[in-house]
Image (tube, rainbow, N blue to C red; front, side, top):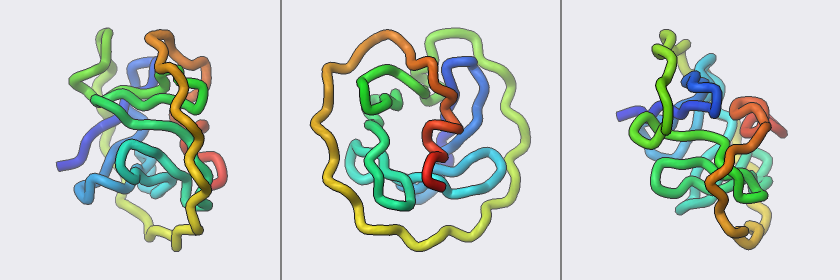
Length: 118
């Protein structure tokens, strides 16, 4: 079952596919993937962590949430576009050490942050 990811603005802009690994934009582009609790872009850059339904950036700020973890009222989800073909993954970089996770939110846009190096 696909899992919607909401940005701090309450909009579902991304989702985790049925494979529980690939993260897509709502427009159908595979932009990053999960390995254990770490999030990597397709070029292998470590981007953050996914823990207990919350996505954290590299500085430990909350940048996205699953539906169950979103702390406020959410917008209604739009219709998703068809998934595009995934590209080949590059070799992963060594993950950074996880910082102290914060309860405050990142000011970065969810989709732009996780689509870097797309």
